Structures are given as C-alpha cells and as structure tokens.
Image (tube, rainbow, N blue to C red; front, side, top):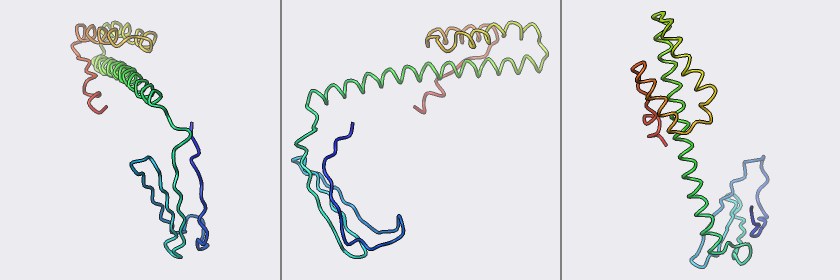
Length: 157
C-alpha cells in the first residue's frame, strides 16, 4: 500500500501544451530520513520545495525483516517454478523434435511409441514435479537418443 507523505504545488510555471513544460524535479534523502523535493520551472525559474519527514506510516524493523524474509521465500519458490517450467518446455521441445524426425522417416512404430510421451506431457506435464519431468526426459533419451537439456535455457535467469 502507498502512504501519502505530503504534497506541494509549484506556481508560476509558464503555460504550455500538455507535456511541454520544462520542470526539473530533484529528490534528496538525508541521513535522518528526511526527503527533500524541489521542483523548478526551467523557463521562468519558479520553484517550490518540500521537506518530508517519515514520522508516520513508517515500517518497523520487524515489518522490514518479515518483508525481506517473505521476498527471499518467494524468490526461492519462483526459481523452483521457473526451473520446472524450463524443464517441461525443454521436454516438449525434444519430443516434438523427435516427432519431426520420425515423421520425416515415416517411422510409424516410433511415432506410436512417442505418442505415449506426448500424451503424458499433455495430461501430466503441467502438474509434474521437476524430478518427474527430468525422469521422463531420461526415458526419452533412452528410447530415442535425444537429450533433454533445460540448463541451456536457465542461464538467462
């Protein structure tokens, strides 16, 4: 939630079309937590200044600690989910690469065996764990000789 800390108005700004006034806004925060905001019209020189002390709506040390812990916990969950999604995508990509190769060779028996993998990904792939997806990738490799590698996608994270 946002906490309104204060407001100020600058008068004497030269009239101009929307978005055209040349106003420079400067923010500075001192060691005592006082925020100084200065706005100056670069054409007329008109300016306004406000000093804002954060004496209300501040977070306590325990609030900050809790928020940092929550952020770390969610970060780990997000990374685990991203890892799983990358593995599923890599598995799907490998399956469809095999399917393309089998189709080109008109390998009906191979396509039939591959249909089990396709069916599994379509029905169970979304809810599967990373480990289950990885095992299915190992099975695909054992059966068709194509390695499922999600790590090449993960280095960008």
